[in-house]
Length: 462
Image 1: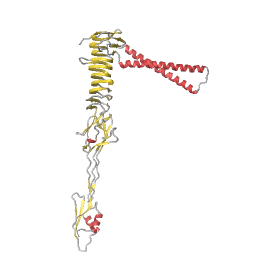
Image 2: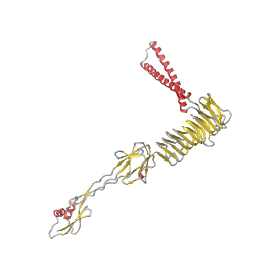
Image 3: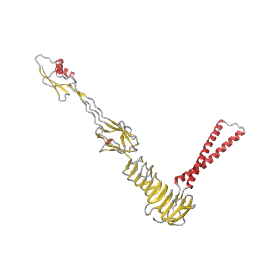
Image 4: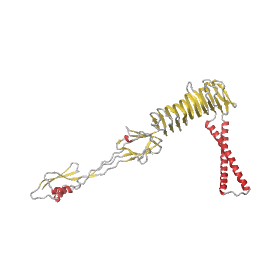
């Protein structure tokens, strides 16, 4: 019997061919196995195929009788993001390729300082194979996840997590595979139903308007190219710069530092300094320093304006008698606190008197040796405890009120109101505790506090 055994170039397949047999010679499994062993093939032998061949031998035809086990290559490394906005973790980075179609670009993904943004999983080694000679065939290790760390992100100490080093918005660059956290949020158009309210831990730039009822709130600076329409714009630690505000008595602009705008109508504004170019119309403004019109024809018409230091514009009030109230000299929040303290003191005094009457009634019953039910005894006991607490609160509030009033009384009043062109008749002015109502228009007027009263002087450009 003439048998030929061949092996593929990758040693993963072995073939057997019976070229000829002698007369009356039988092909047996044992004879084939002996030839296979002589060829040193030991792995992946298909004994069923050999048995079938012995039963129905075919001369001169190759028989595939052995298969090697192919290696299983390792899995690529991957980066898994976890977002609160989604119901489960998302893997968008795997191996050398990033599938940015899976990244939720339409969502603002806000992260906090120290927050784990994503986990990095290393590639696996894979499972080695074995050829027909029983020799191991190495597996290919998976590719590392290729990702570049941008601004405000870092790796954890074990290198397994991406950590945000600041509060901000998560950004991914689809061209450069960069992950970073930005402290700056840019809104391409309006703040409306397409964006929702903005609440951001950094700075915000809005290219369009803020539509009615919407809120832009940020820790840092806020800049709005358009108009804030009956909306709220709040900077917790920075400045606000805005083209204009049409509040419709519902708008609010509030900043820890300064507010810059061209005009405002029927808007509440609270900040340190307010700088405007054209007009403040029927606004309610409270600033801890100054209100200053920077434009050539800046005007304040109607509304209430309270500043600690200075209110200045070209024209204040109007010739049609729109009610305009100006106040300088005292921090508006201190004055408001004094007002609230006085109101609370009066409430506490009234409550204390009512409790004293209740306890007086209790004493009279005791003196008459009247049997008092347990539930009434408990009520009297609670009244006595409440009286003690109220008296303590009243004493603290009175002390605090006196301290604030004493602080105000010691202030040196160099605060001013300046109408560079005209102060209209009918404007109500309060400086310290002195009031002033001009009965005629005052051109180029400077109002200040001297010797317990408000005096009007002339304004001249320096």
